[in-house]
Image 1 (tube, one colour):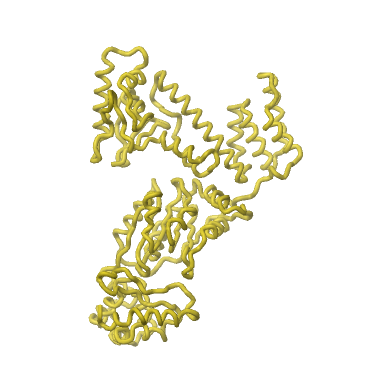
Image 2 (image 1 turned 180 degrees about the vertical axis):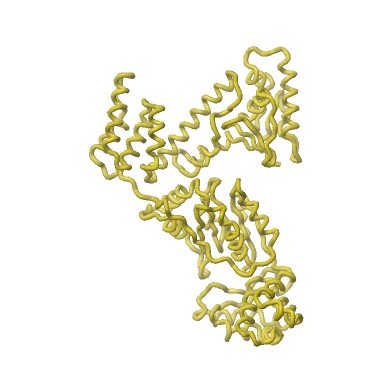
Length: 536
């Protein structure tokens, strides 16, 4: 059971995504008084003081217990109670998601310097904290949280300025400078944004206004950092120049064509659908043996739901030509696709820039043929706006445990699904004329989509050849019968040698055929011929 308590806006709660009624304001205040200390016991006396104030009504304790009982019922589910009795008080159990604590965790992770983490942290805010509640304790908490939010907003602006932004921030900083006319940090941010937007006279004029107000109202000159920034603006210091980082009009569309035909995989498609709904997005790890159809599934799903990702789709083959790609190379390709003209030289800075560019954008990333979690991690955008589908022969436990990826394992196709693929490719008439040969081809291919595709390709290019002859060639000669007709693909046939070796695939797809086909033929012959001669 997933319970989410929201304090950063109107006080609310959800159980398994369903909003629940929290009752009267004081009952909601009891939940807030527990949620700010989630996982820790709050003594009854402290709860009463937080909810009713220092002038406590005589029946406050009895009313508190009544409110606790009602909240328990409202938040009840299969996972057990979320409010428990502990050490003379009550506690909201630690596995309840409280938006305030997620906000603080992300701010701590950002360290004032991570655009992605700060953007995600501020996304938890939906308005003024604790909206709908009143009281001295509530107001004190609201004021403190407002200060935390303001500090995070300042940190985010500084982080965005560090990665080269300027003109994009002018409107936001103009409003903030009007609200905080004596805040020198805001004044410095606004000066730099105006200067980078080509509005240096406006930047200098704003500095003069801030200096005048500081002298007249506080009797002090601007501090050293603001004075130094003013000097740099006056001197047109090149160090202040913005580095163009994005072409806003670029919407990458990198997905390869959708595979045809596609059959089956209903359960796996449902799991992928759950990863990216209209409200939430996440990471999915599609894992299985070579030739099992991982890329086939990922691309079919992605093309089916393109409308969910209006800001573009990025695709990279991390294992092209059998050589693992350095994640830094993949990041560089993503930046090119996003229209970045000049990139930082440091790989970590490039990765941070990539995360900044996709923050808040509704995009899909397909990371194909990943070797392991370490190769994938630098390519994860984070936040809640982008969905990521990773395909790999590795089970990727680090991605599943460390990043909450949904596990989507693939097995071989059923006999009915394999028959359906051959029928789609060869036509129902041709398949229906030779049911025995089709059954044998299905058995030889072992339920692997890649093998079925190769078999169907051979049959399509030899339309007059009976399917029984093709099956006999494979049974008698293994891949030898395919060599003369398959030099353009360089692919051998995946298979299952035995129950113990289910999922072992002897296939080397995706390489240059002319240079490597002898190697393929030798390797496949050594492993497969006996299997195709009836030793399955």
